[in-house]
Length: 172
Image (cartoon, rainbow, N blue to C red; front, top):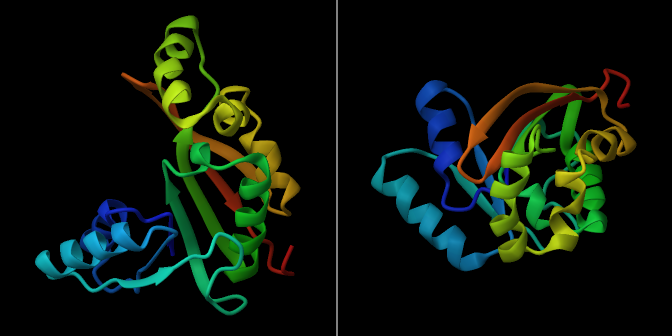
């Protein structure tokens, strides 16, 4: 599941790297989903799409092996982050994995300064947890285990971090 799939760039990459994967894209914006559907069709890639109401994912419990999310969580308020993570945990199978690529705590003053335009555009309230490095704790607070930073990237907009988390075999 690609949570916050947007125009389906990440889901397309997943399908190209793992052609046999069954990929679903989930987003809150119906216009963006329309673009994503056309883009997937144009690229000859099969991706299933669903509209997210911002509260409950339209999938049953323990549906997915992996959930990915790219540059979405910094747009969400703390409450929205927590709700989304609880839904992600619900739809992940036991032993499933969560991968979140998003802005993280800047590792120096330059990275902090580069992130300011993002905060001005997306809001200081939504981005506060990211810039303070609190996202791993929020993920862990939703019941995920072994939350870790897989890698960091320096970008013109600040530090991007790949977070990994697992859902235990017992559903924890």
